[in-house]
Every structure is written in C-alpha cells, then in structure tokens.
Length: 435
Image (cartoon, rainbow, N blue to C red; front, side):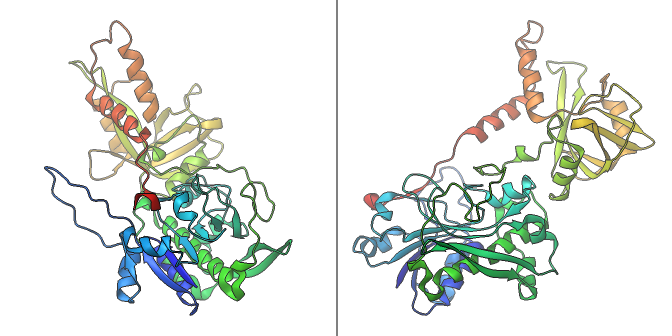
C-alpha cells in the first residue's frame, strides 16, 4: 500500500515514524510547500529545513517540497491513501478525488467537532478546557476539519497531560465497526515520560511556558497510538466514518468550535470578563507574558496621556479580601503595605508581586512601581485598562471638539496592529488542477 504523507514539524514526524513501523506501508513525503517569492530590498532569511524533511533525508525516504514531484503519481492513481498532519495548506477536492473514498485523512490534535482550525492545542490550554484528545478524520473538500471521524481518543483530562508526568494516564481509542462502537485501551506510561518532557520546535507556542510543550508532546504520543490502531489488522479498511457533529463517545462539551491562531492580544488581561482565578491561570501557563495598560499623563503637546504596557508577575488569588476603597472598580487597584491589589470580575481580587514596563528589561518591586506612579502618573483613579479600552477611549476623545487634534502615536500603532491581526492571511491551496 502506497501513502503520500504531508507534514512539516515534529508532530507529523512522529506520525510518520509510526506509519513506517508497518512494513507493507510504503511512504512518499511532501514537506511544506516552498513559495517562489522575491524579497525586494530585504535580506533573505536563513532557510530552516522542516523536521519532516530533515528526518526523511536522513532515513532515505522519498521526500520533496514541490508537489510537481508527485503530480504524475497522484494523477495516475499510484497512491492508495493521503495522510496529513500539521500541514497548513488546504487540500483541494481536485486532489481528494484522485484517491479512493475516505482515503484522504488528517490527524488533528483536538476532540472534533471542537477546536477545529489552526491552533487547537494552544486554544485548549488558553481556555483551560477540562478535556482534550486527538481525532483522525477524513479530509473535507470544502472546509478545514469538517471531515467524517474515523477514530478518536476518549476525552483525556487536559491537566493530567501536562501535570501528571509520573502517573500513568489511561484512555481509549474509539471507532465504529460493523455498526458497533469499539474501544481499545491505551495509556501514557513510564516509557513515554522522556518523550513528553523533551523540547519541541513549535514556534506557535512561544507565548506559553513548558506546560504547552508537555501538553503538545503528550497529544503527539496519543496521536501515534491512534495511528497505530488505525493500521493494525487493516482496521482502516473496516472502520465506518461517523458524522463530525459530536464526540464518538457521545459527550457534548461546552467548548468553542473554532481555534483561530494565537496572537499577542490573547494575553491582554480582560479585567471585566476574567476572574482572579482566570487571570492567575493565564499567568501560570505563560512565562510572564500577560500584560495590561496604565495611562501615563503628559504635561504638554498633543498627547493628553500615553498608554504604557505593563507585564504582571507573581500573581496570587486573594480570598475574602476587603478593599480599603469600597468603591473600587473592576480593573482598578490599590497599593497597601507594598502590595498591589487588583479587582477582577465577580468581586474577586489578585495580588501582584512585581511589574515590568514594556520598555524595561527587568521586573520591579511594587515599592518601586509605587514610586514610579507618584513621579510619572497623575490619575485620580488607579486603574488598569485593556488594549480595546485604550483604543475606544482614544477614538471617543478624537470625536470631541477639544480632542480633534489629539494625536497619540502609541495608540495609532495599536489601532494598526489590531487591523493587521484582523486581516486573514493567505491560505495556501494544494490543487491538482494548478499543477
């Protein structure tokens, strides 16, 4: 049986290694497509060899990053199956139609139909989702991650995957055969510890700490075990595809359906919608990357104030806290005895141990921050603001007669950043018609 495998990173490389353990499966590899673009007036960046290409070359596996290499083989029906894992290009129906029915499949690190899209692991961690898992699905000819489910892990406690490293974690691979739902017992055990703890090359996890890396590695192992079950005893030939509208085990979860790419605004603290527990959790899964804004007043010029980005660290939930200021607003803070206390949603409070202005290399103590406030800030109310609140206040000010000439370059830059993040990037398409 011949397989065309499309991959890019260490996640897909581990999948490839699992497939190669089956001697009768012969694999050709297509790495990430290389676009022929010229960079005018800019130095060319160093070309990084994708992990899947590096591994294939070292192990004498037929590999290319040019789809034209496999054009004739695809068109002539040489391949029996197409498998994708961590492959960002959309596979057009003109390619899917060259393969037998339900033989174009994708390995996706979420419990579909939840967390479809580009960042399922990041969004699972960011949302503090209780359960996660892996799904093997068919490729949908029109949309990402809307294919039929072939095999799926049972829901696994997300925290167990990045916290319970020493404990065995039991789960099941679930699929349907001859009208019955079958469950194979699986587990992450002692032999998997080293793999779960090793560093990976996923740059999309740059905002997170080691918890993301361990979670991703753990789901990679789950994925390889699912792939193993898929090909053991030729299961792939007999598994019945199921509709992608609920988990195979039947549970309905209150999770987001889509998982768009992570960006820097995901780490802007939303005081009005996040409780003290939410903010502290966000702090615990990042390496001091969460931030807020505080307005620094200006004495002259067209800038009435300038928003200063502040990173917060050493956060702690305060239970049963009674503020000195009984009228403290959400997002507002008070400093008492060297402690920075911030009010969050639902009348909850956190204590912050240190802060860092974005233009400074190091965090400073609250005592020093208090001195900076007295020197550089003249606000009657000590209150933090969000990215969107700063932009809204600025635009509102600009619409008034007295603020028409106001110009704050920092906020103008924030507006441009938000606009650029809303712009959808180009989705590469893999189409046989264009070859």
